[in-house]
Length: 332
Image (cartoon, rainbow, N blue to C red; front, side, top):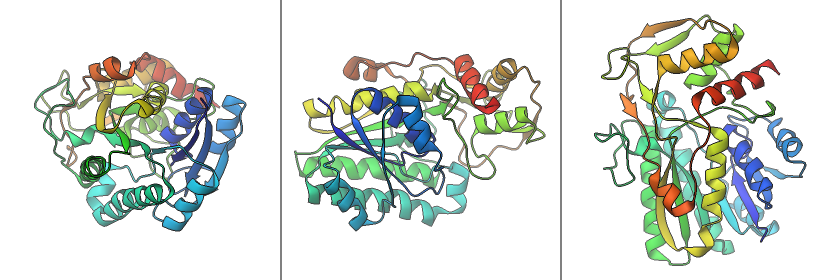
């Protein structure tokens, strides 16, 4: 049955892809975004990719009155919450902004939901909640910690959500622990387009391929990994988006709080990703080795088996496909 789904941060990179998949699953979508790190162009791009209309409200999730109004006026039945600041390095420099936005916004939104009587919630969490994991691939049962303020906001958020679910059994909450989203919509019309200098690896690699950067900075080549560079689980954003639909459609049959890894289940090093992007673009992408960044870990790879068992979800698209789709979007 079609639902009215609120997607906060739905004009952002991941949010716009999630909105596409939620619409394709037959639901109606209301997007709330403040455009701090997103683009107005995302809304018509989502509509063009799906052939369906989207309701859009420009607002901030820290604005309680605005959130109550959106939830009530649009008869929202479930919320997918992705509105957050998300750069690890920036969080180290600006911790107060991250706590105010990521934690303050979450609490405000949940409070508004409770007032209106909406209790189904999918939360955008992160593999950063595992800190420097000792067990790789990482299962959901691994010890939780964080090595930077961004990770701390996700860890605190999960604690808040768990406490809320215990306090009131009307809540059905799933936290999705993203590993490293990459790729773009296969049409090439929706992709990651950060404002200013890119913080994440794939946008940096593509900027170098376009000639907007002279080279990619590789932070650390002395980790205990296959080639000394950091290893991550790069999940195609379309796989990530389909994971949200699987989570959303499981909410009505469950109560309480749970968390699931969304990842490919295999690791790619920084140099391997640069090689894959060079192959996809046909351009020899230059890079320079720099010192490690504070808060980075050697390897982070998902064990996604619980998501497959419980949600019927698994990732299908590999790093080569992610690089091909991203380069197609860059050429547009």
